[in-house]
Image 1: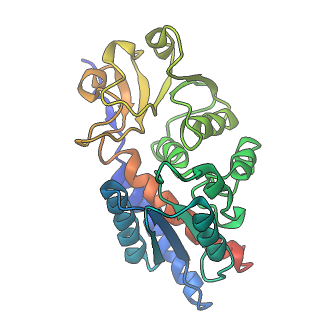
Image 2: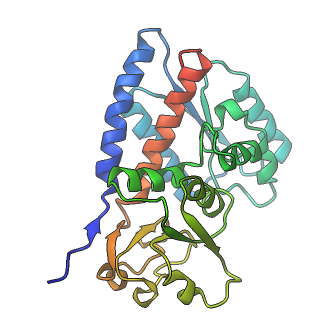
Length: 283
């Protein structure tokens, strides 16, 4: 009789992280310190507004101050950079998150680079990426960090495994590849120009889907017993993995929703609390 695949429940992992954070927030409160996350939203994209509200609610439940900065969609790159620099200079703000995407006329990379490395809790700066690649980054990108947190929470081994990452974005595919490599996995990075993609994915012990296409990864791509982490989130609560087709092939798989997403938000909160400790010389 075949073994039922393990569902990697992100909600359960997120609860554990948040319970640990409550104690750390209480520790800060003894020194009259309230960790603060400032979220910058440019324009009125409905999905972005929803994400910002979700993050704010998550902060409030843990006693983390959530500061929301809304800028008009006509905001220039220079105005956005200035707003970020003002947050950098504010000692009450410990983490800065620029909600992606920004309007097309804005130089998003310039805006990301304006974030102080001490407050780059979402790991979006090139300095943060370089530190991550060298293995000493304080705040890795939240979704890649969430993926590793799920693997660790379920005791799934990384060392010696062949991981195939589908996607090479600077805030997901590339950093998660570096993090897996730093944990002694053998990593293959695939992308839109990769030839014979299904053949390569079939070699993977760990599959990370981060391509941004609904139901992209098919069941016959998966080696029996592989671990699948679906970092995609597409309209209609659909991931990048065809869950039904891949389920019986996998030994463990994240659902969408309730997989990587909740742990990503919990990781963002963890980084904000950590930044508050560092900023005040407490660790």
